[in-house]
Image (cartoon, rainbow, N blue to C red; front, side, top):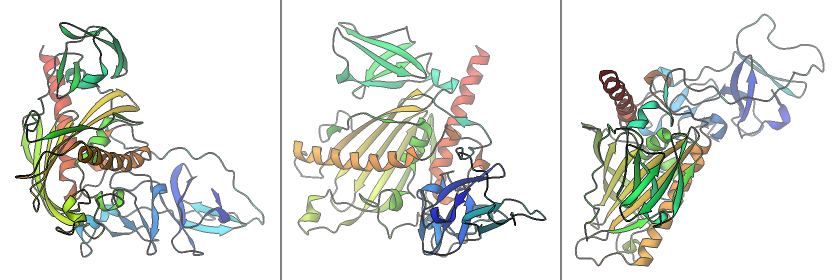
Length: 425
């Protein structure tokens, strides 16, 4: 439990009756409210939430819950939309303050709270909130043996040297000689592609991500330094494909706070994955014409998302006012159950008739993308996730989540196809 003095407008995680909750005051000095520990949408711990207008707001997508646990707002659906019943939270039966402590009764009881003066609860460390009930696709899923994975930048591997890398819970040693790169222990294959070294532990069943901008002389590449996330690759891929979190997670970079509604969009399924084309409003502070007063900060862009299982992603952003194009490659290396290495490359085109982006422009774009990625990684650090839930009822999906649903189904299909192939062999 928690002492009354410790509970303010910042959520505090607590445990009661074997369940996990957060307690918070929805107004300064107001009564204490209690909520289940996770948001039903993407199972984000509500301990990371904030109090907004007398409600508890989830940090990821801005879903808001009132004191009774009713979902008061799903921003991606619009202010006039009625949240589905499953969006409501099952709050505990009773919450009271007594003797300087906050007391919870998860279920009705004849005498739910102690009446003895000075009674204090027995406190214990609060364990992490429970995860999904169904299967999750984690970094050690057996199907990942049958895919190509990036394991290093090509520039990290020098001729005659050794490079140790982690993949799927194991260590490989890479060596480069005149014939190329080899791995020890032996893998099904090692290759170089898109500026990266790729390794397939067993015969791959995935489909290569095509990148038309690679090798196109109208584009200039800028690599971010490889990053590492203390969590699995699935939620990172889900985050990359997600649009509804922009106003909340990326408020300091490009998220438009007044553009929270996500219009309906289509997803086209393709061999090995899918594609989706959307039009979005965003703030574009990187456009030089914005600083010159020629174009507004708020701009329209066409976003084309391309995904290939398991963890190859491409996003092409076409800025409709200027004609500039930024393509982002987001490629993930599942190192261990709780570790993923991230490779991000920007392919930049300044627009028709414009000179190629100069080194200073590329460096500025890379720095900006690093700031965006840092915002996402801060959120991922709070998820306490073991993988991407594959049972659809473990999370609550809404219209804006079509790409996330497609990702879950693609990973489930990929794993099932590998199992069938192995059974038939």
